[in-house]
Image (cartoon, rainbow, N blue to C red; front, top):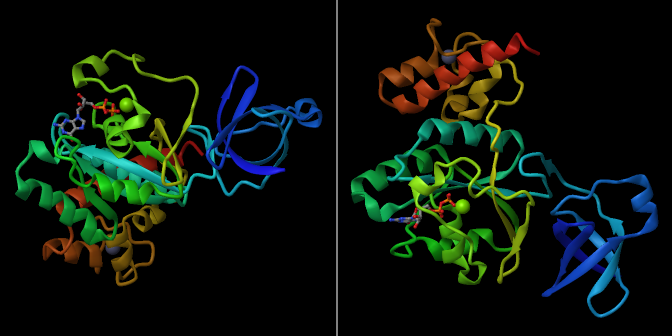
Length: 291
Ligand SMILES: Nc1nc2c(ncn2[C@@H]2O[C@H](COP(=O)(O)OP(=O)(O)O)[C@@H](O)[C@H]2O)c(=O)[nH]1
Ligand SMILES: [Mg+2]
Ligand SMILES: [Zn+2]
């Protein structure tokens, strides 16, 4: 038997990558009967029946399971933010960071289209998120900036791309591996809803080992269920200060003895990040009523 990874499912077959070979697989009878759901990303044991076809004999335990896109065993999310065209949406970035942390995924932030903006603007973004402790790359598909670092970061893992349409997710992957030939489009072409949506999730196999899904991750942006006191744990720079607040239930709004407010006064934390925290706190409080 061979071990491999399901890279796509298509009209009743599963395609399993094992080493450099792609097997067209059907399911063993017992799996068909149980209607066990298989996901792209599942590690499986297959038994070849001829030189190109095989049967899936066993699914190995999953480490996790993303819903959007439906992929198993995802280790990393690459959040792509364009520095221009479209303008960086840091509110969306901060939201995606929470969703990724909640799923316990490794995060890599790519500030893309660096070629379109001044160095100072690039560095401002880089320093802010790097300073908080995230892994950050400045990339440009046009100048090939940061592409080899991105390639390195994708190696050997199952990753998903996240970020809105038009930021350059597909372009970055094409730059990492030109053979992928993913469709890319101009921003204006993309505003037509559904134009580039793919129904089948596919994991792209990378030359150096590893897989990546170009299907945008986290298309549903609802924050995970949590208590209002817990939101600041998702903001590392606030989480660090929380223990110094007078009240353990401090929400860092107007409470006396709040270490976060003190740090804000002294410009030790970024105002934009703090504002996003306040905005999202409101959302968490609204959601509490629903659960
Ligand atoms: N100037 C510049 N344009 C880029 C860069 N990356 C992507 N683009 C352009 O941005 C548009 C959207 O790219 P695409 O990869 O389709 O974005 P996606 O929707 O996130 O997959 C395309 O016209 C790309 O050529 C970059 O680094 N610099
Ligand atoms: Mg794309
Ligand atoms: Zn506080």
